[in-house]
Length: 348
Image (cartoon, rainbow, N blue to C red):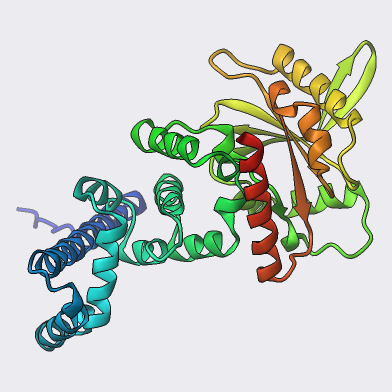
């Protein structure tokens, strides 16, 4: 009777797809756990701030507020660590003052961490609180990005900030409740292009080439929702060739965005040129369900009165200045503050 030959077990191999899929599951689970922990801590800090606030105010002990917070911080930090010191408790009290509604905090805490909130709550304007909280939630900024946007005066550079406070609040409420994005939230003035590294003398083609080379950083400066479509977009009109510098699409606005680059200050002729491009794009490139294309003319100088007299926005055109070198922070803040005040006075 012949002997049975036992077969050696085959070497076990693992599918790379299986390993990658399990890695993604673990990674995603860790992210979800971290987000849940961050949200839970943020809500806890708000609740602690609220409870301490009630204790101070209801007991008519406002004059002893600092002493109460100091004693609480001493007791809690001994038991639970530095995260509950008197300094941390003051952050929590400020948190409740700036965001008094628990429902709003609960919603924001799904995307914003406690570190995000600490960057926002010490800003000097309630409209800035709402603006940065909503844009940060919408665009998914890191704490570092949020800090950079605040330092870069993003709010003051938006068209939104130039409106009366009542209209600003209405647009921010619409963004919060419906996610509605408007051009005033999207476009800013000036644009910071210092990252291009251009010298004192450059031509329009150098500026365009630098923007293409640094497209990722340019998109970051433009803001969330922009997608690059084309460079030197060719348009044939009555057998003549025209070329648009840059063409983008904005998902939130659901429309094409045409960008023209100018090395000098704004001139009235630029309006007619952009209107021609926008009408062509509307006829030949606009897709069903999209809004009318909109234009942005980036100039070295703006000439505010000229822009206002031409009623550019009625034609779907925005004009903004760009800076290839940034002035000192104090000078920039002063300039932007003056621009905002002047714009609001014109509304009145």
